[in-house]
Amino acid sequence: METQAINVFILNDNVEIAGKLRKYLRDRFGKLLNISLFFSSRSCLKMMDNNVHLVVVDDYLYEGANKGRPGVEVLKQIKDKYPKTEVVILTSNEDIGFALDALKMGARDYILNKYGAWQRIMMIIDKNIQQPIRYFVAEFGVNIFIVAFLGTFALVGVAVYFALKYFV
Image 1 (cartoon, rainbow, N blue to C red):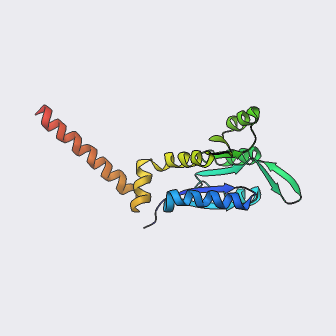
Image 2: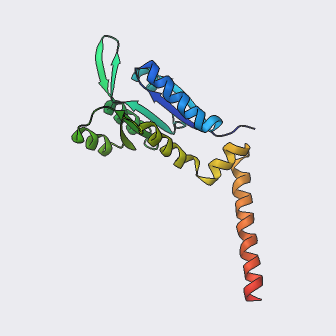
Image 3: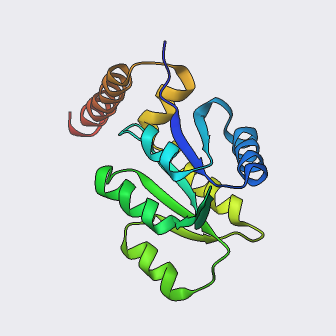
């Protein structure tokens, strides 16, 4: 059976940092994540679809002859086309105005690339995984319908038990 892992895109022009972040997340979440690396905004945006849950975007991307493209431009393009996709800006830019602009444009978080940054990304992913149905689907490979059916069956059973115990 097919599991429904969380799809994470990492967009960073620094191959070493992107690779280390992917390894860090894989070590913690294993098969619960499908992680794709992109080193240019063009390749990332080309592969985007509604099934991407989270994109971690570097704030400034050096792309060939172009000097670069701000991560907030990529954020805007993603949010315009895929509003449910969460975007995290990973940056060394401590400018509060820049951070507020990114958050206003729909960034899930604005994380300074310092000690503890990757743990914050991990916590964002962990919150997505903790959704009960997604957890059962990813962990046990069962169909969403089966999880919903079993959950409903269990709730009805508990309600009947208490109804019989306290009202009859």
